[in-house]
Image (tube, rainbow, N blue to C red; front, side, top):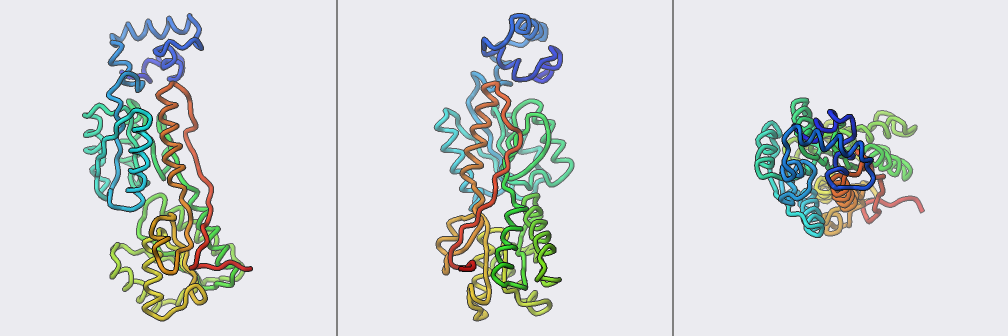
Length: 335
């Protein structure tokens, strides 16, 4: 039995149950008595019941990620650890690797540590039907926060960036400056990567000047040399792009290296737009034009949402941040 069972039996919302436990004055005496009678009937002790509400607990939040060395994940971990600590919560990190088939194992590890909620960084975790079912079932007993992914379900809160329109915006920017041979470079098949790819394709198809001169290149081996080889092979068999949109800044920097190796002038003959506005975008030469993925805002909003859930409020379940592009030296818009 959990908070949802009590709410269902009392025919009230989870927030109402939380308010009763918190002795909130916003609950009528009739409703308060009904909820407390059910709590007594089910034999809950105050401390055990409080755990399901995030009250009087170990004050620990579980964080699940694939690879902490990934620069996007590392930044997110840094933000979450600091924000949670500032609000009196410890964080417990569990790294699952890229094989999401073992998701159940890692969720069970976090639950065994009596965490009050689980933050999942990355949309890879919702790539399979089994994982989606597992996450929904887990959310019956504690809040789940998805970062950069979307999954509909009770007690699941999602924050992600509008990757579709971000990629589409980049296509429009390139076309407006006369670029006519566009390539989308990506290295993942996650939900987020698919949104970026779909936006790229949609933008290209809507452009009156591109025709069929656009393509996407999936780099399955995510290392510099193999990606350079893939780019070289692509240009031999297809076309030489004059505009590249990359799924992240790491890929964009490899595109710049490819241009340097082949004496292609950037941005005159090849414009490159990265993704994430990571440290890579500032240390590259020339400095990289990139999409700002608003990671700090995503993390900040997620922590705020979590605190509202613990407080018995009903925050928005889905938050989508809008795209913005940071223009630097690898792309020049029209004067």
